Length: 132
Image (cartoon, rainbow, N blue to C red):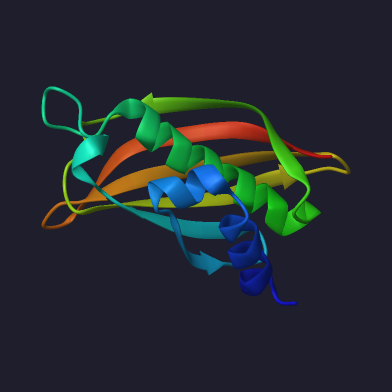
């Protein structure tokens, strides 16, 4: 099974990701790209996407990137997110990539963009992914 097909299978097996509506756009050797259509219930009281939604998308991008190196049995050990600007628009895009991988741990980085009329960087993140 190729990487994209395997990543699609894993994404479809995640009830939370399916509930949110995450979509896999691409899966490479050490990187992935995910999308999340923005629904009205994702907004908070100021009319921007709630930070937990952005963090969930980023976490998946980081974990899927680690999974491209280790296979599907991976978990996030930790991750940090910097919110750079409020997210608006119809869809969020997340990219994750492996910075360094050892035998059981990988350091990963990623970013989330909101598609407004043009993409804007809304969050950056870094984390550690473990092979289970």
